[in-house]
Amino acid sequence: MKRSKTPPLVAASSRGAWPMIGALVRAYPGRSAAALSAVFVAGLLDGLGLSMLLSMLAVATDGDTADPSLPEQVALRVAATLGLQPTAPVLLSLATVLIGLKAVLSLLANRQVGYAVAHIATDLRLALIRAVMGARWKYYLQQSVGRLSNAVATEAQRASEAFQYSAEMSAMLLNSMIYMVIALTISWQAGVAAVVAGGLMLTVLQTLIRSSRRAGQYQTRLLGTLLSAISGQLAAAKPLKAMAREDHVDALLSDQTRQLRRALRRQVISKEALTALQEPLLAIMVGIGFFLSLVVLKMPLAAVLVMLFLLARVVSYLSKGQRAFQQVVVRESAYWSLIDSIEDARAQSEPRGGTWTVQLNESIRFDAVRFSHGDGRAILDQTSFEVPARALTVIVGPSGAGKTTLLDLVVGLLQPESGHILIDGVSLAELDLRQWRRQIGYVPQDSVMVNESVAYNLSLGETDLSEDDLREALRSADALDFVEAMSDGLQTRVGEGGSRLSGGQRQRLAIARALVHKPRLLILDEATSSLDAEAQAAVVETVSHLKGRLTMLAVAHQGQLLGAADHVYRLAEGHMVLQPQPRVAGDVVVDD
Image (tube, rainbow, N blue to C red; front, side, top):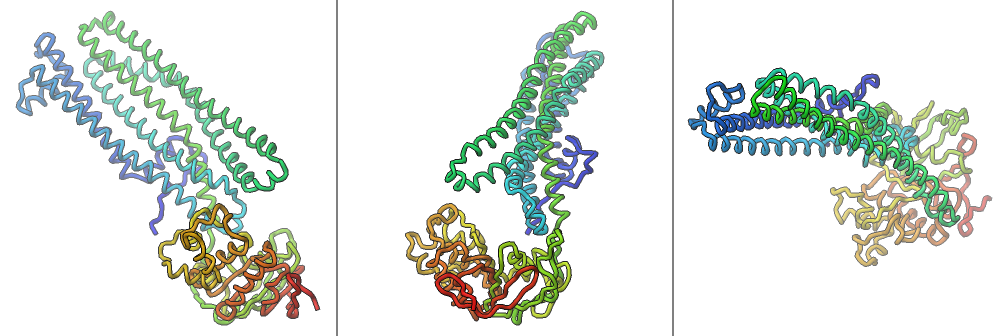
């Protein structure tokens, strides 16, 4: 799998728009160089085309080219090199061709920039997803799903757009420099005046750039908070509606939405104020330039008109560059927020473990394992017990005893503080963790189903699985019959969250999904606790059919699953005790 690019980490003290631009250019040097080269050559062609127009104007007005300016000299030399007479029609035709070539190169440059923007957004998204999925489980539990969704959907896009506006700014600066050089060759006094005027304009309007930066930072923070709140509230939509608490959601989200609106308004005000102020300043500078060139420097009218055109283009390009830079600073906070998220996740990268591989032919054994969540209360306190291979072992105990934590230790999501977890006699710490997890099928209490086909919910989009693989998994989970009875079989959509399925059907599909890769260990985490007696019986029957074919480790409170167990352990106060085989009446465990 190709690793996505991410720009190098920049120290927090040196962060800003320019360090961000530098990091993006270093991460994508080829496309950046191609785009800038095309922009530079396009600017040169534009300047050369303008020189042709200047020469054409001189020829058309007085026909005297005895004392041409430097741009005119260049234009005449190009015409001579091509073996053409420097007549007005010829020079106009050459100018038209050069300006057309400039347009083509600008298109190529914009295409490179567009490709780079798409690559940056994709690479940043993939880098964040891979960093988060590769982080320790404790880190993942601390993250907000809404915040991560915002980073993937919004911050990555805004960060990539910063590169687009950076390229636009670079193009404007290059073009302004080319026109400035041409202006200096005609009149160095007027050229210097244009440089000073442009610098003053940029300085005067810099306050609006700073205002845009603050608005962008505020927007980034609010978007993360808002989407976190939205995802949390929508996840609890059913109980909120059932209790008529929609007004609470409306009040919470409306307040945050209004704050976001204010941030966006400040951003819009800064943007429009910059545009509105640049236009009158540009007009004032053109008027002053016209007066100085014509009255003070006593330049010919034709030369004055050309100079005014050049100076207006210089200041116009500078103003456009400043507007592009404003858009860069609005988006820089999204870029740095995303980079921080990536680096934080990578700093919590999960260890890959050792190099040993096992096939779980014997047992899973806890040997004097101790684990706590850091609050001083031991979830497991020097606990020792064994889960035999190809048997169904069920863990029971009161809520909060640590049954799910025990499963997380078996999977390797958590590591014991002391003691060992042995798989076929090999410590889990010495195993290749990915190879071990690929032998595990996991069925949670609430199996997530997306509004796609049965086939997609089984394969989760993995293309290596054939239809025969899916049917075999369904058959093993006693789910093939009811799937084939559906209107479209494997292609039947299950509804959002599996709403078109019964609870028992959802769990049997979840078991089929866990079995599709032919695991050696099947983990059932409260897989029947939310089901009614009939659905429990169907799932327990499925589990009973799997006994002897693979190792099964289940967590349960009570219910029919205990009656099918080969071994039942009770976890309480950090200790594991082997229970006598229970008797089950209905769906309730009866202690002897």
